[in-house]
Length: 81
Length: 81
DNA sequence: ATTAATTATTACCGTACGGGAATAATATCA
DNA sequence: TGATATTATTCCCGTACGGTAATAATTAAT
Image (cartoon, rainbow over all chains, first blue to last red; front, side, top):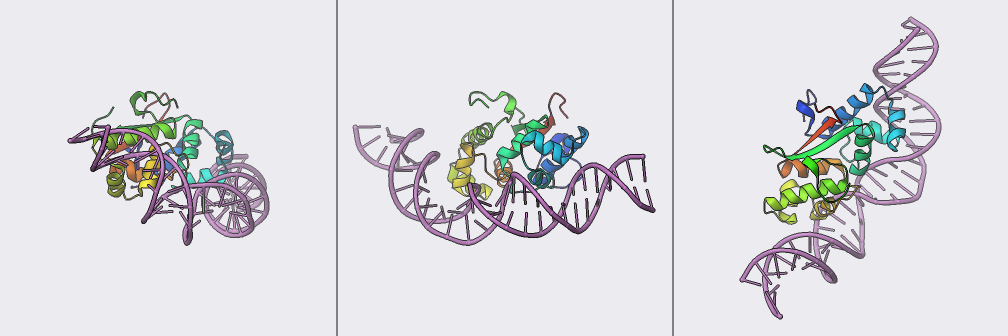
């Protein structure tokens, strides 16, 4: 929700997700153009996702996440699996 | 990707995500109807998401995840944050 | 085995997603 | 500071998302 810090990569909003994706992309020294091509999406999509677009489609998001070498985990709150 | 087991809630595909969401919903004894109402989405959306729909929109997905008391985390592969 | 509950499928329809390209705005670099 | 690189915005357009309701199919309960 708040754009400040993301405690241990917890995703509460699309903003959080976008920030994490952008951070990884930049850490790897990729432009949006490069990363989009690498992940098989358009630059428009990647840019919008990084800016926190709520209507972005999950299949494409997962392609970006895995294409950039990120991992996504779902747990039950309070009881990590 | 394979629909068998999901090691520690790792999400590699929309199928994984859908299975995890359905599992939590059932563990809490909710019908799709109840859970959809709880999370503010339609039953159609929830049903499709649980079945692994790739074009479901992330904003709505996050509503369901948090509405059901699940948590989502993104990490860099190999180096947990 | 039968009934009840739940889920999947289908239809209608208004809104909109995202590719690709061009251009404006912003950030980075020397 | 000026040049270059990168990102954001805008446009066109074909495809489609998701709410709602009805119904078929499947699962659960008795």
